[in-house]
Image (tube, rainbow, N blue to C red; front, side, top):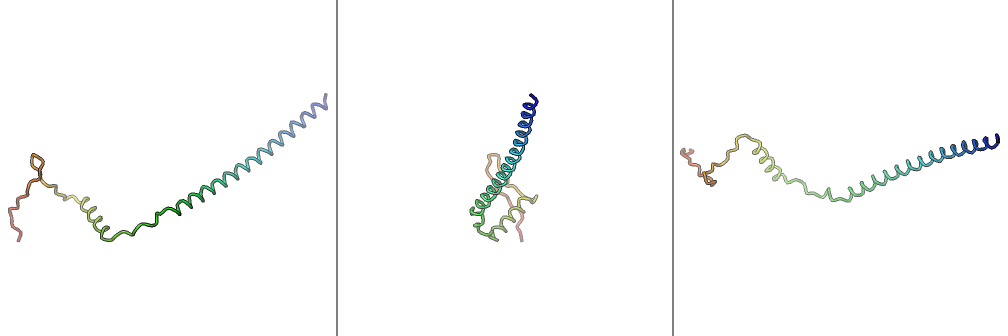
Amino acid sequence: MVYETIAILVVLVGSTAFLARLIGHLGAIVQQGIQQLDQNIAQAIQNTVAQLPIGDFEPVNPIQAAIAQFLMNKVQSDNIAMPERAADGTFTAKVITEVPE
């Protein structure tokens, strides 16, 4: 009876040690797989970005940039005069009483 109990304990301890080692080995395999997956995803993203036609844009036209800057400055200024409208919604003509010299 004592030998059977000792044998059972040895088998249990051995099985526990085996399982602990197996879990550690599987953890290392999973960690290595995750690292490999991360590298593959990074490589796929780099390849995708490299193949996109992002860099094929024309340079900014300086005339268009100047016009855009002028319009932005005009919109941000406070002296924008809206045209007058009549009661029916049509624009009214501005009457100039002074003649510029």
